[in-house]
Image (cartoon, rainbow, N blue to C red; front, side, top):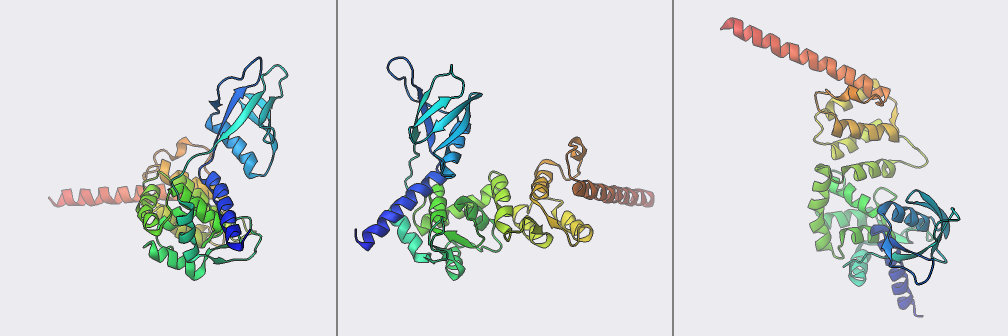
Length: 318
């Protein structure tokens, strides 16, 4: 096989694997008992997700729960064997999702920005988009990666493992998920990505992803100053964001944010009104947020008293 043919074969394989990550296949089954097999029927999404998780981990065998019963899945023989001896064995097959992405056009798009990146044996590919090429890509997308949440949303769609880097399979995955294979179509997706975050439709996924990609391995804590910058991008419409950040800078100085607290702040921002009237209905809030809310409620009471006093003074002058 020529070098060029080998490169195309490798690209096709990378596309197939990345497409399955972006568009997870659905799994179907049919009973294997008594006479001719029945019709193929789809598993529910939860079971398909369990089987896909086995595939991503490189496992050929594993246990999954199907309608409350445990089955031993064998992906080599494509069969699910019940652990209950009286249950019926089930044949398996994978039904891949279809995509309109053109592999050749996507390769041309990728190669415009890609360069070799160490290590050569990286599971997401020996090359990627990084550094000046990363900035060039976002310039062509008319997005500022430092100030526009659309950049975080695109990184999340790619499931990029490193901030500011799109490895080969990561970029393919993101383009497959967005169904684009050229720069114009990808640019056209930026307003949608931005709006989906700011409207809350994709906020939980992008917010959770951001914490992981923002960390510097092996650290598992995000410095407070960095967290505040990401909150400004992800939660610009949270009325208490600036108050919380100012409070945290005073009372949490020198501390960092762990994943649990990061996710609870999203819950506070999206599920509790600005007057904090429903905060105490959930007893599971961390102590840090209890302390912030106590301080915020005290300040809100003072503001109310101030407004009332001003109102009384104006009434007396009349």
